[in-house]
Length: 198
Image 1 (cartoon, rainbow, N blue to C red):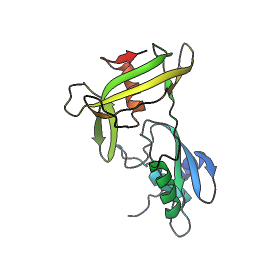
Image 2: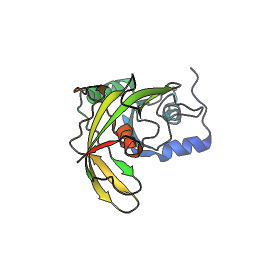
Image 3: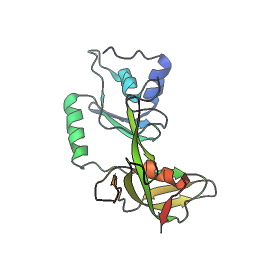
Image 4: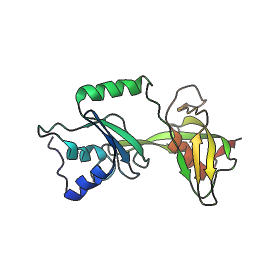
């Protein structure tokens, strides 16, 4: 497959995302709205933009993990296949700690600390899959339970973090299967039928 041709503006954009770079890895600050790979819309993905870091041989960095299109955060890339394999195994073996935060507007959730139970289902558009809040009786519904706590709040926004995060994504009734369902369960704050437990 031929690499994507990038404009000077796209090269400048992806280079502006660099948080850390060395000979082995590049850490990027992925903004919301940019798909990690194979997005829903006909636009370059972060994976496509990595061409900007290609070596003269054409070898370019590889994504080590992904973030949902609407999620912002640090995303790691490896400059070589062995580096990608090493980091991928570290993530699969849970030797890398990931921390999730959410900005909630307007203001803090009520109660400020508790748990959200919501039904989620996997939805796909094009090559992109994501979790979406759905009715509990939907045939593909998965149970999700997320503890949260408000770290800081004003009248207009709040910073919320998982509190002893237990994220379940399993068929009803809930079992102990785990999934990073925080963005989807946080969306349930704005959904009818939400259930909070303080």
